Structure formats: C-alpha cells, structure tokens
Amino acid sequence: MSTATAAVSPTVSASAGIVFDNVCKFYGEVLGVNRVNLTIPKGITSLVGPNGSGKTTLMNLMTGLIRPSRGRITVRGIPTDDPERLFAQVGYCTQFDSFPRGMTGREFITAYLRLFGRGADEAARLAQSAIDRVKLGEAADRRLAGYSKGMRQRIRLAQSLSHDPNVIILDEPLNGLDPLVRAESIALFQSLGAEGRHVILSSHVLHEVDAISDQVIMLSHGYVVAEGKIQEVRGEMREHPVLIRVGCNQPRRLAIEVLRQPQLLRAELIESAPGVASGLLVMTRDADAFYLDLNRIVASIPELEVTSVAPADDDAGSVYDYLVGRGQGAQS
Image 1: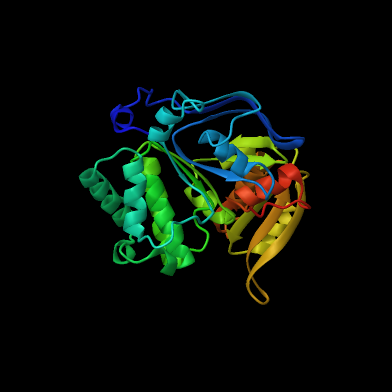
Image 2: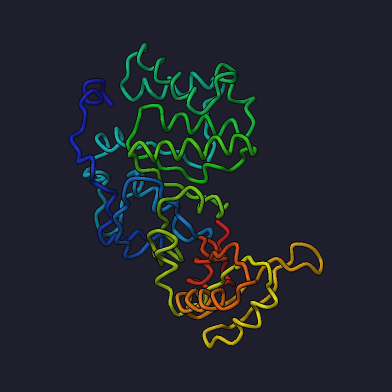
C-alpha cells in the first residue's frame, strides 16, 4: 500500500456492525459456511464450535483473505472486496506462526507498520505502544527464533493491534499462554471491547468465553446454529431441560418438597464433603415454574434457608451440547 493511500482515513459509520448477508463459502465441493446472516455488534463476540465448524472460515471472510462464493460482507460499512480501506480497520491475529528469520519482535512489528505506509518515527512509536500493551517490553529486542510459544502469541497480538484498528479478530488467542499472561490478555480484550471496538475471538476454553463475551456465535458444520447472549440463547430453548443449583441449609428437606412438583425431572444432593450435603441440583422442564414453587416452599418452611439459586448449565459448552448433541462436543 502506498503512503498516500494509507494516510487517508476511511469514512465509516462508527455504529455500523459486521454484516453477513446470506453468505456462503465453498472450497470446491467442501462446505466452509452456508447461509450465514449475521450482524455482529461492538464488544466481544466469541465463536464457538468444534474443529471444522466454520470458525476460521468466518474470520477469514471478515478480513477479506477469502471471498464468499455467494453473498456480501461489510465491516463497519466497508465491503470486504475493498482491501485497502478494510485493512485500515481490521487487525487479525491468526493461530499460526510465520516469522521472518533473524528479526526481533520490535523489528517484526515495525516492518509491518512500514509496509502499511507509516513513516519511520511513527512506526517506531506505534510498535512500542503495541509491545507495551501486550507486556512484552523486556523481550522486544530479542530474536523471534528464541521466543516461547506464549511470547510468539503475544507478539502476533501486538502486531494485530499496532495500527490501532477498530476491528480485532483473534483466532485462538489464549493458546500457549501461562495463567498470568492469560489473565492479562483477557483483561486486554475486555478493555478493547469497552473502548467500542469489535473484538471477535475463538477459544477452546469455554468457561473463559462465558466470562469475557458480550455475545456468542455457535457454529456446526458450516451453519450458524445460535447467536446472541448466552442467557438469551438458553432462554429460547424451552424444549430442553434446565439444570439449577440451589444452596441451602436443609437440602434433604428441600428435595422432598421439590420432587412433588410436576415439572421436575430429577433432584440430587450436592455434597461439600463426603456425606455432607450443602445444596441441591435439580433438573426441570420449566425454570420459571420451579422458581415460583421454590419461593412458595421457602415461605412455608421458616427453618429452611436458601443461600443461592443459579443455573448450572447457563454456559457456552452446555448450550452448544443442547443445540448440536453431546456426541459432537464443543471442544474448540
């Protein structure tokens, strides 16, 4: 890209989302994704699904690295077949290593920014800012060949952030990170989302997806099977039983009472220690009816104290299992 082109700031709507309009992608006769209609808002969006479900294809389509076989994609108002304007808006951190031999981390990011059209001084300043943001300052002037897997992951992340994009796409960004760096990276993703950017990521660690995501997109065999906030998706699945965890001081007494309710399918004691029950795990066809019955039971038994009530399967892994079947799993 020329310096003159890079200096032009693209005109986009700050409120525009990432829009997939009836998008299909085939690799010959192999399906990548099919009939995708999505509008991805600002904030953190996680892609959930096993290997081969279409997550990476969806990411590559957003970045313009591949073209759809059918349909149209716009990113904050920019069509993905306009690569120069798109590139100024998007940062992409893939899960694959590909580094020039002999370069340091700082040189790697600086060279990227120079190719992007930035002058030497600006490139040096932006590279330092990105390195600081991923907390890799001490290793910035070491050769990439000596980096650990986690350090290589962080320098790729720094590269994707270095030109200050409004859309950050992260393919398995937590792979290879130790617990401390993983926590720092999650905090970084949350801060980027809070700044009003689009942050799209995929992760094998579904409890982290639940903790950091504003919304999820669940994929299976190239199709979007659900989208939205986890709680909203789970709430629409009325035909599936719901697991609810109840903490209380008399779980056996509570079990006797709730087992009389017609919507209840199962109740089992939760043991905090062998032989010591601290609560009850119930499976019900109708969560709303169960909550009403629970209120009535507690009001009628003064000595019964309920300390907590929470869904036990209100997470990405459980919802995905319900939608596509436990045999397939949700491991990636």
